[in-house]
Image 1 (cartoon, rainbow, N blue to C red):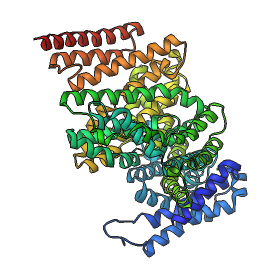
Image 2: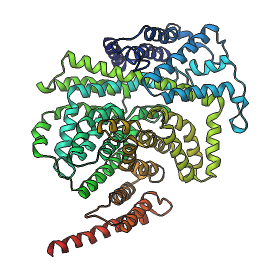
Image 3: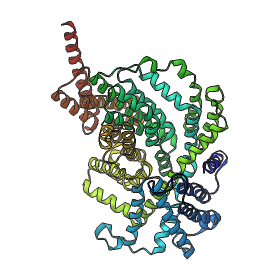
Image 4: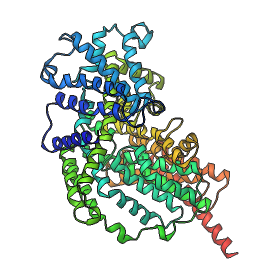
Length: 621
């Protein structure tokens, strides 16, 4: 199976550089080669299935899952030419559609997230029985053929072979390959050593190393859980050893790992879907998201610093901090990343830019013996890319089914109307309701499907009510995107926090609570995209600096208030006061920016000066 995955990953890389087949052929081929391995690599029931081999039933599932996609690839021209909902949906198509949906749901249950499978089932059930429901939930009567066609064979609007599967099979696949080759070349070692060299000498060093290295690792993996497992295996035990409570250590690692999907130049898969859905060049999305990503990690570093100072946690031992010559020995590996950023800024297509950067990564690795990639490392990189692409393929295909159902039934309009009615014309309340909606979706749905579904429901409402404020497509989508990402770290169900808690041997719920407080910037920055467009590098230098300064002051106040420490420990009254000032600076959008900035700076400077004078007097005494 590893050979199979490596071969088809290499084929996807070739397509990225030399051109893709026709869309329906590419989408069918992508699902054909990556769906069956899920049944052979993930057991149906871990406690009862054979541990060392696929069972006969696993092979049967794998073969059954391949049949519908093989039929689509063979009949690609006919599928492309047929008129949706007009040409007959034959009995053969109906059987294949049922087979496709059932096997896809089972693959998602095994390899992705059962919650996504249940959501897909619920949407299909809504098409069957929605005509019995009252009020805005009522739908017209759909025939079985119409339901199966909407879910399976409507490639222009949604379904299994819709545009979402197209973007995953093309651009996202090549970027996953680039990230995999980054890991195989030793770029991960560069990031880890750089994080330790930069942050290890300061109070709470291991926690700061976790923040820096997780942010850099996130640009490669695009998965918060794999990020936790990769970096957390090293940083969480080290944080616990020097004095952090296990749940706090897990929360720090989880918040830092989640933010990797927000950090340019290689953001999570949802960012590529955003570019496809909005027709906004990916390079423009990177520019708009850059300051927000830096603010997110600034807030985590500030929270970690105050926590370390309060607990009296020392820096890393000098013997554990790599010398700068060790860091510089791998510095040539940043050249392909620089090439990728340059090509994206020059508006090259995403897949071709990632293809060139991947080849450049192999070439750059040959410059030093310690990073040189041989055939084993190349094979491993291709295999790991395939292991990442396979679960993502079925997850996005299921998202296509959900979007197709919501569109066909009019549920997008109905649910959006419900939210709009509750908001009562208030843009701020609408934003809060959509924030809660995305976080709730994140309880059982991975980041990218959660973003896709919430964007389909919420973006039209944000654009309509936000028209007087000048809200545009980029702002609305980045707002939804941020909350879809941080949902991985917020309770009660948080995939990344649960993975970190398993390493720390801590309470998963407690770890997710700490992850939410360390990742508080995800909430402030998310709303800032709507109200403070300066953080998207819009406007003049004054607007950009002012919006960024407001967020810096607000996040410093909030994190200091939560930790109970600025320059020295603080009492309850002072903590509450700082917290209120920080929340006003972050969310007091009705007030002029000058007032918000003044409140944040005066509160921060006042407390810092007072604590500094008190500290000086005590030293003198």
